[in-house]
Image (cartoon, rainbow, N blue to C red):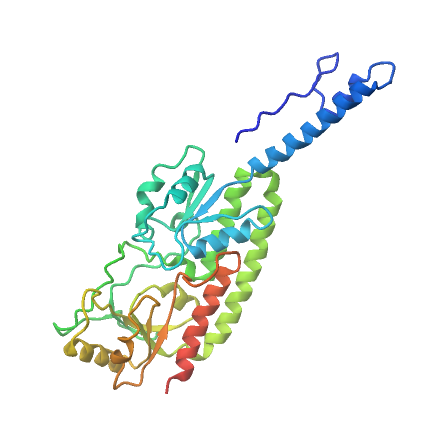
Length: 358
């Protein structure tokens, strides 16, 4: 609701006076305050306080974030001010997400919207074209100094200490193809999985909020500095935890972890994708097992939405173990600590699988 501000009273010279000074000016030369006027003064003062309070509340920026990791960074920057709105919750896919009426209203009223980019949140492309005139949009994949890595095709990758870039598929029965729910552009869009990129995202969010809400600029910038320190400490802890496993090979079904791999010097052997429309046959299972053995992969990582009953069949007859990774934090509670929990959970999943491997 728009609050109409009452004009300050003017003195006899035409100068505008704040509420309190207007009350004093009304006393007149005698300096006496009739009882009736005291009641009027009290009413004016109460109204001024009420209007000023409502005005400050109305000026709190309305922020909308697309996915949980981005929402968590925005929540950390907004600490002490308010909570951003999270659009894509739980295990919902950013590729096929459908807006609810409440989501549409949040976007319509937003002062600031934060997303990764159209190559990830495909479902938001059209709604974001209809934002209100007052809204600002932060596209994280386009901000200055954001580190972007090139997209990788599905298939085997040479490990970091190998010279060749890619192993070509040799057998027609492999059917190892890119995951069909992604739009593969020039760059990999899972950029939030590098804490350094998370720091850059936090700084960009703080900058935008400081422009929208200059009265709280010091708060936003202070929160950004605090977040930077927390993320640097997080990266140090995770690097130490994963250091023993830097030369361990692994395969994934969803090639979403390139930023995490590079940030912590892990060695992915490659990615493969099972067709979601059918169960793999004996020939397909044999091919996957051969890939595991050829790459000396100790772990095969799936994601929570993957069919759990199928996983043991994939590694049958090999030394590989099954692990689960979640790049979006579908099971995490939204909030300023969700990003830290996400990165720590990924590190624990990698370490847990490698530690149990022969």
